[in-house]
Length: 360
Ligand code: F6P
Image: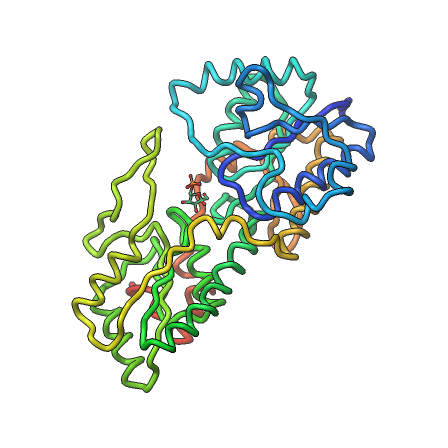
């Protein structure tokens, strides 16, 4: 058993739907145990910048407001990455900040990158941490699901439903570019739920000629519209990324593959006009779905139970229909979880006639 009296909670990395439901769950469960909860503002910045940025949270912060039902992060987040050489000095100010606030432990709601970076800070600063996975990319290791993914899928699915109607009015093949970074989970779920004709993911190579062949056969069979989903992390046919943009720490920033495909398809296919829709950050801010709210509530409650039991340096996970938790070092070691090209998702897509790239 632990002697916890005060915990901190922060959201880190790109925001997504369901973060506020996680915060509510942690705040409610922790305050029922008599603990104080400090909400740390703007991810790790709240502890590394001076003055410290935080807010004491109580169940009333959430029960009297619509916040738990909204997307975005009530606390704000930070999505900027960190240079390796800065980790040591940031850990020091981070640890000093946590000690100044008298935090006995920290709940970190983040994706694979945040689990790596913040667990590193916590480890170096001697702070007990429990992680809660969230990301629209669904690429956090070990857990089958992360908070925010279900809502993002819903946003993509609804976008495809809308695009189909306008595509049909104008004899068009509409390309929907979705997020997901290097993983195709979101694109594949979008493609399956929105019943797309073609779905391209970073994990599977494709040929423009095969896309054109598929489009021609759709037209030949009497349909005047088509839906194409492409993940932002998909490369050009020659294996290069469309954009060479990078962020402040040199990581790739994606975007533009939809337009590339449109141009290439137009060169070889007269059957359809093409148009591109890039959903962008809409995918991060849909109305949190029921599934995400349930997951958020279970994750938050479990994190508090773990802290009470003295189980730290672990990440909560949803695995085989159960809440469980894993060693954070194991999570970090696993890295990013990509779409399994032999998964039932890909299998079902192919079996129902979707072109998802070339088969081995
Ligand atoms: O990791 C979540 C995510 O939304 C990715 O799908 C996307 O590539 C990236 O974040 C966008 O980040 P930013 O908010 O910095 O534009």
